Image 1 (cartoon, one colour):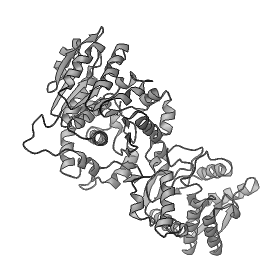
Image 2 (tube, one colour):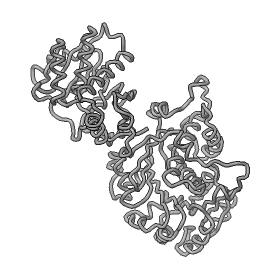
Image 3 (tube, rainbow, N blue to C red):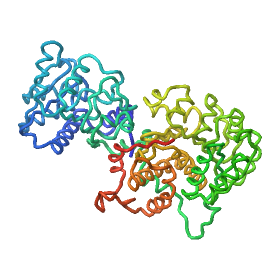
Image 4 (tube, rainbow, N blue to C red):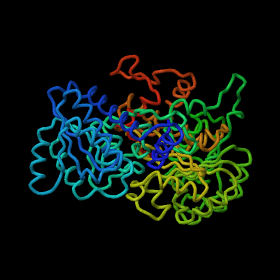
Length: 551
């Protein structure tokens, strides 16, 4: 399913009028009717309730005015609070204002001072509110009378239904622009907005309902809309199909360059992540003094001791040996638990520029390249990087707060500026390609908020790359399946206290069920036989209470 930016929705509106003989007035009528229907289905019957309708000066306010008129027609008690003089409304909103007045809809003009006190009394008598103050075009912090009204409505603690988007929320970043009016339900039009799929926005949206108000399907699937919500069908199509003639060579070979003294667990988890996702052969290139330890920890994956620094860290002298090992593999995972020594940084730089197979650069590998991201432009093969917000901030010489404030922008910037595929981890992990494509992941659980889950993910990505998936598809599938495994762990063990290693034995079972289109993907003891079914739509709603956090 596509996810729209504010600009995408503006273009959809414009093309609906110019190419498909629709009118803004007609779209507004359908939008207002969709909100009215959703409110009645959720909060009805409304015959004994009073609905407060909050209207700004733009077309979002026009949509809300339609809802108010329709309620009045049904003899539902309604009052409109307008935060603008009638002559300040947009032309289309003015039309709806005149229709509302003709239908004898009560309209109060919000103002400061004594008038505000009278309106506050009227608001306190309302049972619920329709929020049509701001639409997706909001780009600056809410202030003035709008801010005052938002605070006043919030103080009533009554349910709010947002028209298209909660007022005060950025459609693109999902970040608050000053004060926000939280909704218990958001009725959005055409497509979900990309900003909805962020941790920041999730506490403001309530239940999300997406309604097509008459847009042609071609408009909603325009190639120029580059953002999508990852789903099960997308992952299923990407996974390789094997027959009984398959052998370990056809499943691909992965080389994992990992490990330092005290950090052999990262190498182990990454190796098993690659193997459990289906790679045929996995080799861990590790500091030679740690080889004996890893030979005990690893049974199926192989080890390859390489030159090290004093203290058990990988040395730049290992470059030639690792490049030789890479001649016989299909992908490389570089970075889990390799430490942060200066000479190890030189090894990472050499490998990034000299490897000729797709690679994943993760964890300490990213840290060692902080401030030297230009080196990725010299890579000879596709590169996937997997920063969490702290690592992204380090790479961009920014702050975690700045990264979290606009995750979409950060992921796209990293991908396009440095010609890499980016997995920006966190709740609603973002996968971005150098070509500007973006996928947002809806799966996950707080069971993933523990050390080592990111190492499992890096191995999974390497394992899918080795099975010849293109980088963007490998990243998408690995993140989605990793999130599902986290959900399974949460169901089986509980979401708190789970270990990264608990994900590993679930991956083969999950792969089988995904490939065979089995539903439910896992049994839930608290639900009926059908309640565990997942689809792209059900994943969307379920994901609002989940967290996808990787080390």
